View 1 (cartoon, helix red, strand yellow):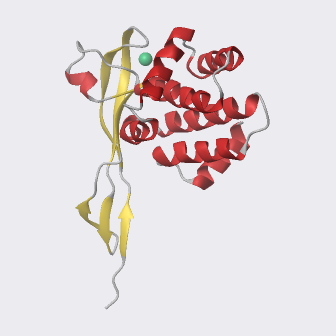
View 2 (cartoon, rainbow, N blue to C red):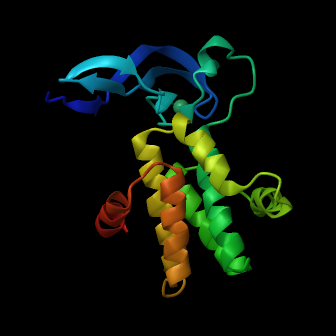
Length: 200
Ligand SMILES: [Zn+2]
């Protein structure tokens, strides 16, 4: 008997509406996206697989949030894409050698991607978390990948590449580090190649 198994990806817009975006500091429109692949037999969905993507995105600033933000807007909610970007850039900085010049470049790059100003103190705070060993970066990225839009993930990879390759010739180990970051974010190596060749 011939059986045809497969997986289908369904990107669903669960909801749309208005919310108070913590980055825009105003009432903006949002969309709640969720992707849940289905296990298929002869092209017919027979079982739902684990959710691979579940986030709320602000239409104005493209920040990504935990969907809880809609139910509990009064709680403090962070823009997960912004938190993931500063963490990964600081992760690369920590592997590089933390110099004043690299910090300046990090601040410029973060501003370029997000239009948000960060300070030296913000970098020191992130580095303290990274160096404490209590919140390892790659498991952190695996955990937040669910809450990031495809564009947010791509922006992180391109920014990491620009940061690592900007001040000197990129060392092999930096490239390995970027591939590891990408894999934690569920981005395939061919996609990393494509992003770097087309954006960096
Ligand atoms: Zn916003």
